[in-house]
Image (cartoon, rainbow, N blue to C red):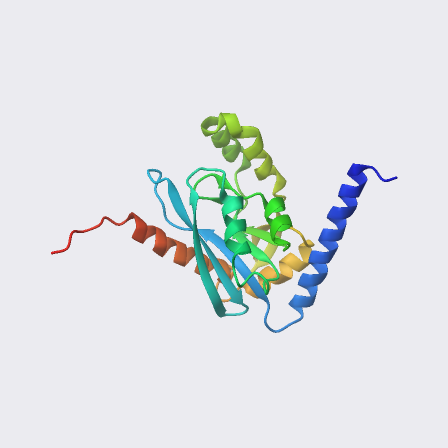
Length: 221
């Protein structure tokens, strides 16, 4: 009889195979649907920051924009993103979730494995430069000593690989599909420049929402 560890390994392999096949089929279609998540502007004095989801049919059709809020330097990024997208009418058609790095609202970290498992979609994290792990580790140990091991574990679980764009790499991490499919999706999602268009739009919307939320309220004259 297989051990629980063996069953877990087999289950993980089946989920990876299913996610890879679904994404590979979608990559062969003219309109690949994805959802991108990014946070918005905030200050350390605020308790919350916006988290925006942009649903796109590649290359350039925006199908929906949704908003939730996450705590600054908190631990609710994964739960809030999962809640937002589970209630989204756009999740059914999406073949992958894109996130800008694994940190939003300061050091509120995504658990990429949990996000992929709970949404039944591959999750691809992308960043424009390789992170300074020593600096991140030092910051987590200094500011979050009680939660250091859990937060550092999420950082270390994000295994980065390069995606060459215009002679310079982006850095990505993936859960739920293979790197080849993740590379193909990222390259297909890039319009002008070298950044995925869904993430660019999520960033712009998040910045606008966050800036508006921070603006002082002026009395009527």
